[in-house]
Length: 515
Ligand code: GDG
Image (cartoon, rainbow, N blue to C red):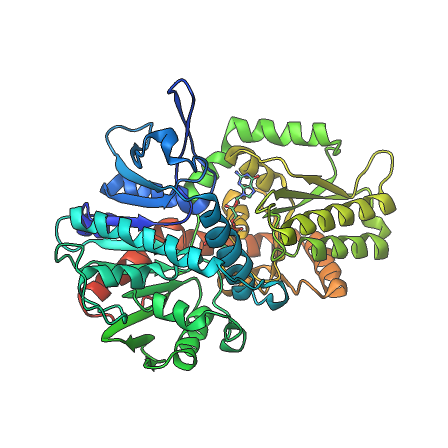
C-alpha cells in the first residue's frame, strides 16, 4: 500500500521541517563531515525520501554562517546511498532569526501554549516578525521546489515551527490573493501543490488557545493547508473548535472534519504516529544491545538481580520527570521491601538549554534525583540512576529490553514514541508499560498499560506497585496486546494513513475519514 502511494507521489514530494535529517560540518580545510541527528521523525521521513526522490527543506542548524559554505544551500543526501538520493535544501538563519523564530515564538510561546502550560508562555515582541520572516523563507524555498517538480507536487510540512508557511506558500501559487490586497502572485509557474501539514504536538482546547497573542494569524496560516493531521481525534476536535471560534469567515463542519475558509477547504484528520517496529526489534536483538545492557549494569553499579524501571525523555518540563521521581520516592517510603530490589533509570537528553525554563527544569530534575538517592541509597544500591548521556539506538533498544517496566508519565504529550519503542523492543519476557493518561499514546495503548495521572503521587506510587507485582500471566496478556497495537500502528502504517488521506484530499474527495 505504501509503495503504491509513494509511486503515486512520484518525484514530486517536498518535505519541510525545522530539523534537518543530516547535518553537515564544513572544516577549514574544505573537509565535510556529515552526521545524522537521532530522532524517529527524521529517520522515518528520510526513508520515504530515499524511495521518492524529492526535496527536503530545513533549517541548516550548525552552520549559521552561509559564507562558510559559499552560499551552497542544497546538498545531495543520503551520503551512504548513491542510488536513492534526494535534495536537502538548508535555510541559513542568522542569530536574531534563530532567537525570534525558534527560541521565542516556537519554543516559548507555541510549545507551552499547545501543552496548556500558560504560565510558561513568554510575551514575544519583535520575535513574531522573525517567525513570520522565517516562515516566508520556507515558503519561498517550497515554491522553488514546487516550480521544479513535474505536475502538482505534494508539499508536506511538519510542526509548530511552520504554522504560517502554508498561507505564505498559497500566496505564491496564484490561487490565493493573500489577503494583502495586492492580487495573486504566481511564483510557481502555475503549479498548484497539495499542502499537508502534520502537527506533532497537542492542539489545546479553545479555552486555552484563545490565550495565544497571534491566534488569528496562526489559524489563517494553517488553513492554507489542504490537509491538517494530528495524532489523535481529541486534537482535531480542539482545532475545529478553535477555527470556529477564533477566526472570522470560517465555516466548520464538525462531522466531516473540514473547515471552509477563503474559498478553500482544509480537511482535519487524526493519524497516530508509529515507530519502525521491525528495526527496533532488530536493534534490541543485536550484539551491541546485549553488550550495552551488561556494561550499563556494571558501570552504574546495578546488581544483576535488581529489577529495572526506565524513563527516557528529552529534558522538557512537559515530560513529568519530577512528578515521576516524587512517585518513586513515595513508593520507597511506603514500601521498604522494594528498597534494594528496584532501581529507576532515567535517561534525560539535554534539550533547548538556552531557554531559562529548560535550564531550570534540568536543575529541578537533578535536585529530585539527589533527594531520593540521599534519602534511600545504601552502600550497594541506588534507587535512581540518572544519565544525560546520549545513548545509541542499539543501546537504547537494549535498555528497553532489559527493563521490567517503562515509566512514561508526561504532563502532556502529543503522542510519545518512547512508550511505543519500549513495546517494540520487548523480547520473550516483556515488561510492563506505565503510561500517563495525558499522552496521545494513551488514546491508542491506554487499555493495556498501567495508567497514571502524573500529579497524583499517591496513585502513581500505587500504580508502580501494581506494575512491579503484576502476575506473569497478566503481564504477558497485556504485553501481547500492546505489541499487536504497536505493530498495527507502526511507522509505515502512519505513512499510509497520511499519504492515503492526502490522495483523497488531492482527488477532491476529502470527506472520507482515514480511521
Ligand atoms: C514530539 C512530540 C511526538 C531520547 N533520548 C535518546 C533518544 N531519544 C529519542 C527517543 C524518541 C525521541 O527521542 C523522543 O520522542 P518523543 O515522542 O518521546 O518526544 P518529543 O521529542 O517531544 O517529540 C511527541 C513526537 O514529536 C513525534 O510526533 O510523539 O509527543 O512532543 O524516539 O527514543 N534516542 C537515542 N538516545 C537517547 O539517549 N538513541
